[in-house]
Image (cartoon, rainbow, N blue to C red):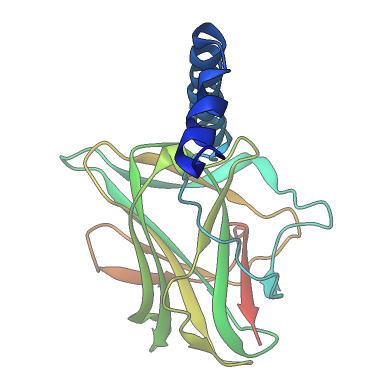
Length: 215
């Protein structure tokens, strides 16, 4: 009489030595654990990085061909919380039209700054198109360039007059906006109190900066 299928399975199970069976089980469990650990270790860390701005086109640039400027002289942008307050604004006319992409100023110092791109109003800074508020001086690079990327991308029109304004954001601000080394002296605006701009005719060189747009 042939043994039943159940008995056959039982005999097959019985012929595996208990120690070996336990080793197989432990190996299987250990292997699964190692695979799980490998999967966890292989998972890259999650980091939030802002995408790089598009290259765009420089429609105004008073830096030289090597992106340099005059580091010997500068306009003051400061506020000591008492009597000393000074803001500086430079005007420009874009050589091409497009949405504002990058603003680059030759800066150094301490404290925080408010940087504004504004329309012209009777030869002085007028309605703001985009404002970069409370920009810390720690954001200024080692090369003394303060590079700001637009978030709202206001439209700039070729041949239209605009202003780039730098103002102290707090009572500990003491910054320098360096002169250009291209002998560009087309007049500027300054303020001795928030919003109290007055135009100064050319003679002394303007602060160095670059305006980049995406056509």
